[in-house]
Length: 227
Image (cartoon, rainbow, N blue to C red; front, side, top):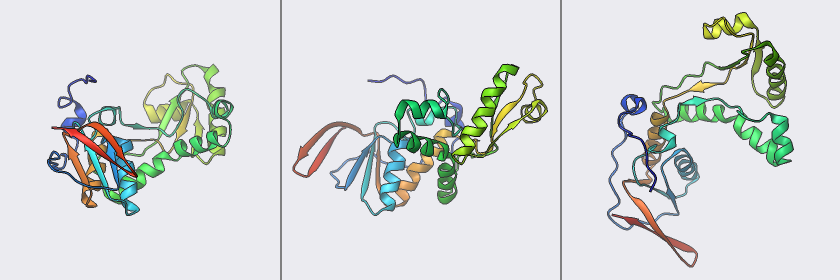
């Protein structure tokens, strides 16, 4: 079993909006789709299916956002950290690279729309992101990022030394790449809000239910939980 650091002593736990009350699963239920795990992927999948009229149930062994979804730094930077866009295209080829690039560079637009649509209380701020040049030799690569990302529809620009100082308060940088769509949120608050949206739409979410076994029979399947 995976081991996690203490959850209820974190900053996000202390400041996130309270989790909605959810009871463990104590009876047999039926649903079109059962999602196992109430992290970002599971919750968003469940909500998008629910919007299309699919009857959804979610099972979660701990609570919504207990894993990485509720423990990350909360940075929403619609960029690729380790690879440039040309490197991604060389690695993946098309159409896969363009699909991934579009999904990542448009991610904050989707997150902002969801937060607004469902009024999620997660301390959302969208004031931009800056990647600063700690030495003059880094400037050329940042200028190239401006060209590459703007070519796929991102809203970025290069800022000079004074501009970076105005943004960060530090005079130590030589320039920077400023992405206007960068944002930040309380990651646990966002996860709890997503789960609240699912239950508010009339769909079932069971907490403290660990999926133990999957059994297929014909065109349907059964999931057995521990408890």
